[in-house]
Amino acid sequence: MIAPFETHAVVNQSPPFEDLDLFAFDRPLQDALAANGACGEAAALSAFGRRYGSAEMLEEARRANENPPKLASFDRKGFRRDTVEFHPAYHRLMSESIAVGVHASTWRADGSRAAAPAEVSRAARFYMANQVEAGHCCPITMTRASVAALAAEPALRDRFIGKILYRTYDPSFRPAADKTGLTVGMGMTEKQGGTDVRANTTRAVPADEGYLITGHKWFLSAPMCDAFLVLAQAPGGLTCFLMPRFRPDGSVNALRLQRLKDKLGNRSNASAEVEFADAFAWRVGEEGRGVRTIIEMVQLTRLDCALGSAGLMRMALAQSVHHARHRSVFQRRLADQPMMRSVLADLALEMEAAVALVMRLARSFDHSDQPAEAARARLLTPAVKYFVCKTAPGFIYETMECLGGNGYVEEAPLARLYREAPVNAIWEGSGNVMCLDVLRALSREGEASRHLIETLAGETAELPGAAQAAGFVANALTEHEAEAKARRAVEHLAQLAATAALAETAPAAAEIFARARLSEPRGATYGTAALESADLNALVERALPM
Image 1: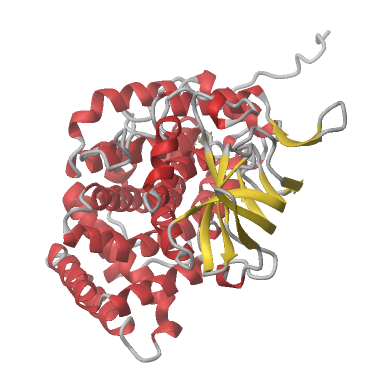
Image 2: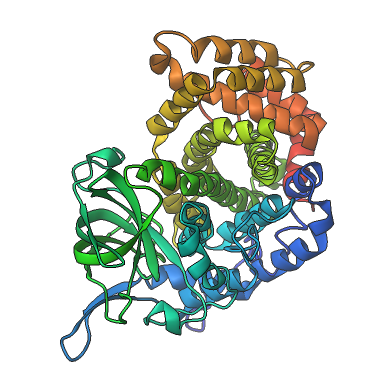
């Protein structure tokens, strides 16, 4: 007689992918850090990798996403509060990331940039944190980037910088003066304009020590934050403001959260529609220079979009390789089957390039005091964001297919990674906006642009297809009808930059990438690149050492 539920033995399943060191098992990341000046950070990053790769942290990520935030418009007495309630797992994730300075480590106490390799080291942490749980990284990145915008108003920056950089998370809803640490969100877009923020209708009127703002925001990112950088029309034109949750007298500010967005992904984090009813705010920068002020913040958040997408891709790839090494089909392990090996190697090659590319870009931010590196950051940030963030959804889908039905169900993290993937390509400027930004940068900085393309061509001179790619980019981006070809040209620019980054990080991989992406482009799906048998094994082994 068969006992209840004892109908079969469970075999041929991959073991749990947990309690691992996210840094130690990522050879491309290690090589990228060494090439970009952060080899001395290995021990600290390994400690970070072990903590974030623990079963405990992965479980916190699951709980935070299965229990999304809720809007609490009123307290039990009927007073308007406009707060957001989160599952404790979300708060624990925030506490972990803030404690290790993912929001603060690139700044000195006075708000100036920390010395290199602060950006590269922090980029590695942000990349690993996104592998575990991406939603809480949204307020982390905005808080970090807000310091760049606040530099336009030194007195205001000095007033809050200590608490913005503080490494103890304080989620309590109370005035900034009573808190130990602060988080900062962002509200730019409105119903009628979206990306075209110059079409904003929200108005700001000077009053007392600041301004009173009336209007709305269609997306207020991370509405539980203590303050928000917002754009509004002041008498002198579109202007940037810092809007606190509490007025200077300690009363709750007039931010009316209308509803939380029901999003495809990013479930652990909240995004809101909000109305401002004479909400108090301080001006940041001059009136009429709101876009110029906020762009300093946007450059950093765009870098983080690319880092975040690379992190999602990394975890998806690791899951698929891990599964393929333990799962047998037709009497052979999946990883030993030629077609699956081709798919995994092609994915690993894409991942290798993405990591090298984003870490090389972070190095440019580390050395922004050098004109050539500053120009590289300005010109390549939108191109890198475009390429990496647009690559992530299709990449993660392919990794999901490597697991078959096991990848499609919610118990596997791939479903969450897949839902998360599109947001970074949309947030802080969609694909077309990124391409237009590249064109604008090229038109404004023609000499610097030509120098960058020449530099990339020089760094890849001996690699197949690189010279042709550089020539196409130089011609396409300077033609009279450049906008029509912008997507293709920006993709080529990003791939050329990735090849150059790989030439420093992993020369053997650079040769393979140049051949497979520049010289002999693959087909429409992964697994169609012309890779040699030796390349297949080497790429998969680098992706996840056995």
